[in-house]
Amino acid sequence: MPQTVISISTRGQGLYEFTQPVQDFVRGQGVGEGLLTVFVRHTSCSLIIQENADPDVRRDLKAFFSRLVPPANDPEMRWVKHTTEGPDDMPAHIKAALTAVSLGIPVHDGRLMLGTWQGIYLFEHRDYPHTRQVVLHLSA
Image 1 (cartoon, helix red, strand yellow):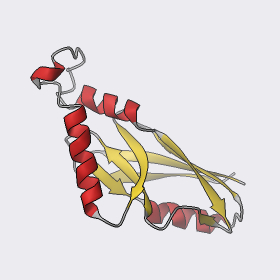
Image 2 (image 1 turned 90 degrees about the vertical axis):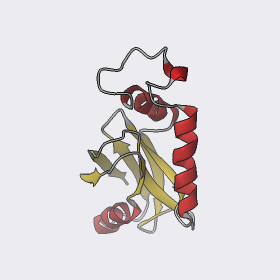
Image 3 (image 1 turned 45 degrees about the vertical axis):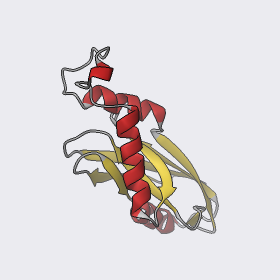
């Protein structure tokens, strides 16, 4: 069963599309039918499938999650105990818990069965740049 790890560099909070390298991996395996599992190896970012046509969608999602879970130094978050890694860390863990760390995507005729406007994104929840590792595992 083919498997690989790809690295995604982030520049702070936001959505980073990586659909193309995933499609390239699947295409290169010669598998007609299967299931691709995408898994991120971190606890302060997550994975989502989202619209990739209008960049306003990414901006609005980032703004929504920032309002839903503000930084730990915000007065609304004074209950947070885990602050040793900065005011963005515990909120990042909460955001990751609300989203997903793995995705399952069907493969048909060697192609991801994504919809017309769907893209695969790493959702970075930390303020500073990181290099994130994402595991791709294709089961036939």
